[in-house]
Image 1 (cartoon, each protein chain N blue to C red):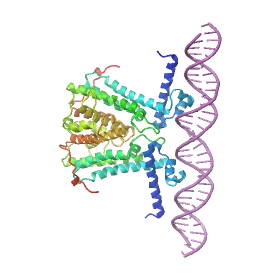
Image 2: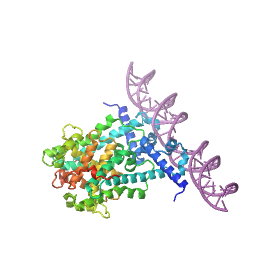
Image 3: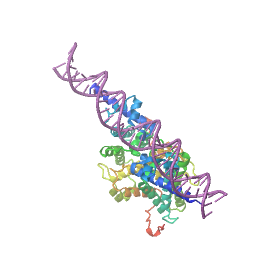
Image 4: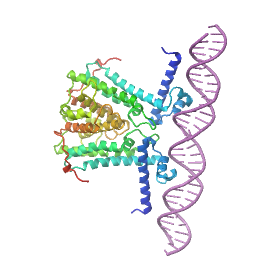
Length: 238
Length: 238
DNA sequence: TGTACATCAGTGAACGCGCGTTCACTGATGTAC
DNA sequence: TGTACATCAGTGAACGCGCGTTCACTGATGTAC
């Protein structure tokens, strides 16, 4: 039950964040400023303070939004296939990791790039957010293994001791699966980070193809025999 | 044949860069400023202009240095073992990638992180520099394969078409090897990037162990049967 | 060897800029009676 | 239904800060004769 005023207020808060994202797109994450946002909106600078206590406050809100948006993108990618098509869902998520980063590269940099000078993120907010997308991957992977569509590589089992002591304990997932998830994650993250900053230029001609191949190679180390088809027929209309 | 004046001049140029690195360590890459450097050195701001034409000029010099230092760290790591101990050399390089990044994290961020606002790196300088460490890896890997110590995984051969069209042509190295190098590189880079910004916190307890295990897992996909010993006996004294 | 001059290192004031934040204010919108 | 008052959105001036860069300058160091 929100009043008209509350709705307007919320709308303006959103508009400020949207304008902030636009500013970051144009000038980079470090180019973000309250004055720039206000000017873009036709506001006076001080009006912003009605909606956010400080610049830090606004940045925190942007970071939270970015984590949520990234998680949601991954969930939506998975939702394009029925729950039991585990491999298709995994591949879709892996593709969505890169796609979201490319389409929202300043949000991606805001989360994973250099910290903004003078800003310190409250850890209690960012740490839990950061892992949520990876939990989803771990869960699907566990289901896929239960269903016999994927297997944990022998290598992992042989070196269980190192993995056991090296990783944190997670609820509902054995450490071998966490390790597999991380392996994929590091590759995805490294690829995307290098791509965003232009460091793949001299070596990679077709980034789409190589990234996809990287994902498929990973799945094949997880025991996948042949590439999934990913038929459009089976995709859900969202 | 350098005059006394030229040597002093060069020493001051180096001192400025060293102070700049210190400033970045304390305030982050975006906190770098000519005024801050001058104050730290007990100089007036304008004295810096005797040595660098502008802030951009200085940043470019720092970037070039960082690329060189990273390459050198990798070469020195490889040099700890005799030339034919390919696997030990590869492992040492992979470890040095992370170690250098952790020990020189602001240099690493300067090269691979968010661009500094207002600064645009001259591509003709940074692009060739960036790849030189990877060439070294590719070369050792090719030698290791020739010597029968490693092999290109079957997966790569099967999907030669995608790799062939997706990658740029390199001198002296087949694309399958480039692909293998990139696979390792993405993992290393992703791990380090996440580690530097604190995103491994909730999941990884012993980063040293997991990173090493990641490297070994990679080498085992390259056909390595048992982990290398890396005996200290065989290491060169540098 | 000393002298005249050119070169170079470093100074200090000044310019114009954009920044986050504070403060006292105006005027519109909502609420209680 | 109208009136009195509280709440809230937004303004504009001002503060103090740090920034890169330009400019005319002083004094020391090196060089040519």
